[in-house]
Picture 1: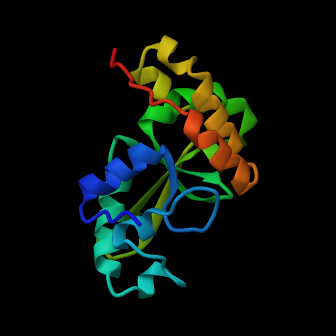
Picture 2: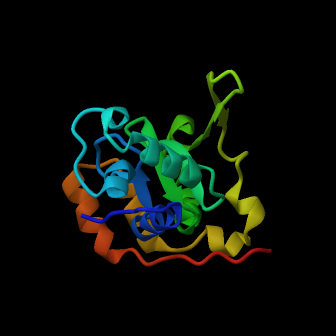
Length: 168
C-alpha cells in the first residue's frame, strides 16, 4: 500500500487517482489509509498517527488543486482539478449536494464550521478556457462510474487519461 508521508505526496496521490474519499469506505481509494500506509479499522481519529493524518488532510483539502465535495455516497470526496472539466460536463447527472464545495474551518474557539459553496459558484469554468471544460469523454466515463457498483469503477480506471488545464 502507498504511504503518503507528506502533504505533497498526498496531493500526488489525489492527482494520480483523480477522485478519492477522505476517510469513508466506498468506491474510491481512501486518503487516510494512504497517509498511514495501512488499513484503518474504525475511526482514523483513534489511530496512533491521527495528528499526522489530520495535518496532511488539512493541507490537501486547503489546496487549490482539490475540490472537496460529497460526490460519492454523501461522503467527503476529494476531486483533483484534472477531473474538473469532466465533472462540469457531467454536472446534470449529479445532485446539487454532490457537486457543492465543502469548506471546513475551525474557529479560534475550536468550534467546527462547514461552509457550502453551491455548484457552479465554485466555478472551475470561470478559471479555465471553456474548451477545456467540455471535452475528455474518457474522464466522463470515469466520473459517471463513481455512482455505480465498485466493480464498474475499477473497470473505468484504466481508460482515464489526465487532463491538463490551461489558465486563461
